[in-house]
Image 1 (cartoon, rainbow, N blue to C red):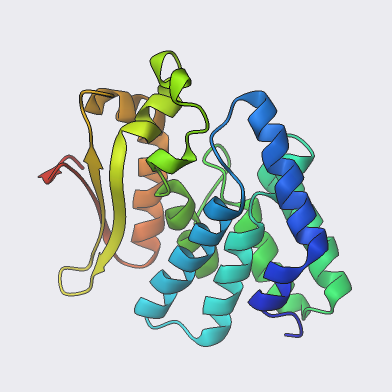
Image 2: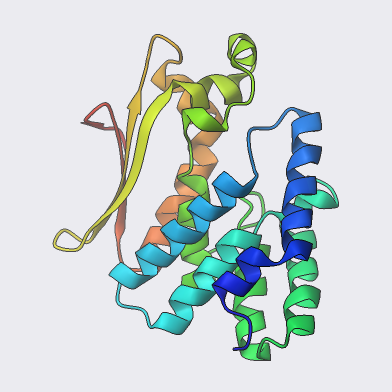
Length: 220
């Protein structure tokens, strides 16, 4: 595998696509999908696979998939997972990545959006969990929007978010601390239920039970 994560992270071409994709989402009124989000996804996906005992090649590919997973938004938000997978294929192939590694990354990117996603392999499952668990206050671009936009309100209400593996209990726990004066718990489920169901499927790929806690109380 010629290009490693650092090569991908420093690539001006890839960084340009990430920047412009986020600019498009800003214009559409979406939360932050820039370097903070993709870097967090890369780190979380890689850490999960490492904790589960996967080899360094899989860990590295999870980092790469996490960093590149949203580049398809530069084309359009609709079907951005598939657009991003096609873009990633061209970029990684041009960089000289081995076909078997390109295939893993492309598959993960193409299967991360909740409308079409499925944990078809370990990297895809890890990316799903990393992406769908990234809910946090700092993703909201404008505090004024929390008064009328449910997505911004829910993200802004989240004071802390932690995805933790409990090997003894074979559980993956997403622990959220939410300011319910800003957003009731029901709002979270109204917009994120499909994502949590997908997280459960991704956890099951690893033989784990997915649990969600809010303010210390188990809700899923």
